[in-house]
Image (cartoon, rainbow, N blue to C red; front, side, top):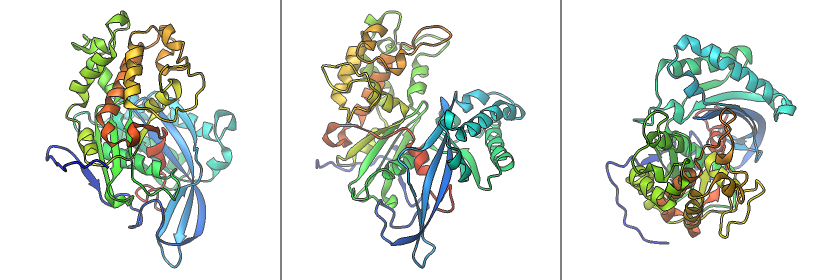
Length: 420
């Protein structure tokens, strides 16, 4: 364990989340009490992300302590039943009048609800019949870029009102919560989601880093796994936000960013130069970096679809043999990810496809028939983020942590589901 001086800066938004999860005081992964009364339920969580919306059904065991009203919830299935709709709802309704919103999102709600009950569309009608409670939560797309807190614009309020109306009046659910969560809430829920999948025998602390389209999150515990000892940080520096900041759809690319993105002439792309640009302009002075600095090494999990895309699509170590299946690589190291970015930045799509044929950034846009050309930026961005928190990673490795973890955490908290 490496000793580190504890330095706290008043300008760093480090948050200790004291018992905010509404769970038993003892918290942790191993219950301190004996629970015997047990019931089963299904909790539906809607993840309204920046680039898409996911409806996930979580089978949950609700356990009650002997001779007490103390209860806890545990997710009983490793894989939830989820259906997705493309496109972010925040981007869809932004700038529209509030009275236009219901007609814009209602078809998406009905389509997803129908799919949840259709086994041919990855749904499960038996689970859908057992849903007892719906929680719809908006993430980075519904937050203000300047504060990373919920944006209270009227069209967003209309989204939450229509979701509540739909599930209460059309679906006849009595318990519905619909609102935006802050970046810090997202971070702590993601940590809790990972804890739901760890064996009860595991008692050492762990940390998570999460990448979304709009924001990035970090969370870990201090000396124990009690929820009172949970620390988190969140910043509006997500992958899509950073890309559009330096390469806006209308306007010139920022000076120096062509090292990250120049699909017309990839010889100008340069992995080390791109990482240096991102280090100076994105990750320097990060509260996530400074918070991670104060903890000894522990297992570090990468969460979110962008991280899992790298785990699934790219080989993790030289000599970069073709990655033809979709299984997750067991781990990534900061050094190898930086070397992969350096290699990819100079290559054409065909050359990348020779060893990473399933890479997301190689997929063609149906309208243009061209790929995004963002593979260099994507890998450099993730390599830079991982480098910024590498001091906390045990064995200098990042482990795959899943892409539904904050929603999984939300499915078992008293804050959203009173039975927990």
